[in-house]
Structure formats: structure tokens, C-alpha cells
Length: 306
Image (tube, rainbow, N blue to C red; front, side):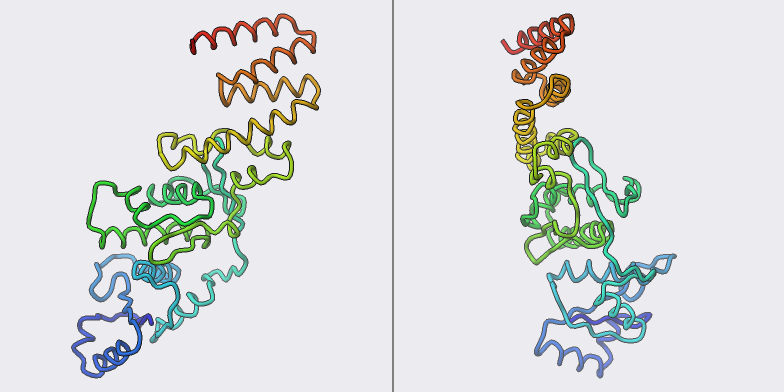
């Protein structure tokens, strides 16, 4: 059970009131009770700006997440009533009932588009939230432990109680950007692939090779090439690209084969097959000078390997 107080309440002062103490003790006798202390009131730090109800609801989600509450009965009073209703229904103040259309692009660059508009880096408010989302995308819908996410964001800190609370705040930010889409329990977190559209997933599950090639716009998360968790996914996407390219090249015209071969070389300048196909395509197109240049370029690159 989660208790949502009225406009202002101090949980410590309330505990000194006999009637409230008896009520809380009764709750504690049959359920796990979580008292939500609103930001800016009670024992929390003061702030000049009064949070809106949307922000209050996001705070409630973060507190429940930190406490490991997946679901709960809400016990609300006064201003807490509208918060409880909004939390339970998932509505926001502008009454948008429909789920936002969220597309995440990770091949060649990283960006998040919500209803067609890019969510800029400055809008995130935290680089940790962006990095957490990237890590969840790399897991491809599989759970990532909370400990892994904490180590990703704060590798040099050890106060797990404080870090768990920080992680909950960051997960709340990710949910706010995506309009949901993050599924968490007490030990792990995963991305709901039914809620968001990810170009990586679309490419790896494309109906045909042409679609896969069109979706592959570059390496997976190129700004995170040194992150261990991104290597396996990047290699898988590359491998799928080259496999699709090889399949299409067998049936395409020389001009298209030339274009695909150049893409293969752009992805991996040491790819022998890409250079070979490029030289053959240029010869078939009656471009001997360009074919010779392509051959010389490949010989020069080959010399780097030897």
C-alpha cells in the first residue's frame, strides 16, 4: 500500500499524532506500507517552484520503483486523490489518452523521436538517462540487472541505498521521455519493445534483404564503440548487413552492385568481398579507369594488413 498525503504533510510529525500512528501500525500489520513524502514538503528539501501534478506522479513512480513496488493499493487524501487517479489511469493533464509514437534510431547515430519530433540531448536533463536507455536497447528486450545499470552510471560509488534511489529517478526520466516503455521489478529492468519502435529490431527482423539494407544506416551506437555491452549487438548488426548485401548483389544490376559494394567498404574498409564486387561492377559498367583506381585502393589497403 502507498499512502499519498494532502497538499502538505510531514510524515515524522504525523507519526507523533496518536490516531495516525495507530492507523499506520494497523496498516503495517497486514501489508507493506510506503509513505510518499511529496517533493518540497514534509521532510524533503524545499524548492521555489511548486511541482505540477504530472511531476508529482513521476515522483510517485520513482519512489515506488526505488522501494521495489510493482503494483500497490493507493491510499490518498485531499490533493493526493487526483494524483492517485492519474497514476492509476496513466492520464496526463493535457488528457492525451493515446500512446505516443516513439521511434528510436541507433544505426549510424542515436536519437529518439516522439510523435515525429526529435527529443534533443538538452531536453533529457541527464546523460545517465540516455545511457540507461542505450543499455536497455542493447539488451533487446531482455532484463538488465539494476546493479549493472548502477555500475554503468556510477562505477566509482558504493552506497547502494543512495544509488538505487538515483537509478529510480533516472528510470523515471526515461519513462517520461518514452511515455512509458520501461518494465522494472526489484532486481532488473527491461525495455518494452511493444511500446517503442527501434531501427535495430526492425533491421534484424526485416522481411527481406532490401529492407534490411535500407534500415542499416551505420554501426550500432557509434558513440559507444568502447562500451563492452555494445560490441556483441554491433557485430550482429554488421553481420546481418553484410549477409543481406551478399544476397542482393547476386541478382542486382552492375550500378546497384557498385552502390552496395561502396556501402560495404564504408562499413568495413578491409572487407575483401566489397572491394572485389566494386571492381567487377565497374568493369561490367565499362569504367576501366575507375576499376583500376578501385583495384589500386584495395591493394593499398591490403598492404596495411600484411
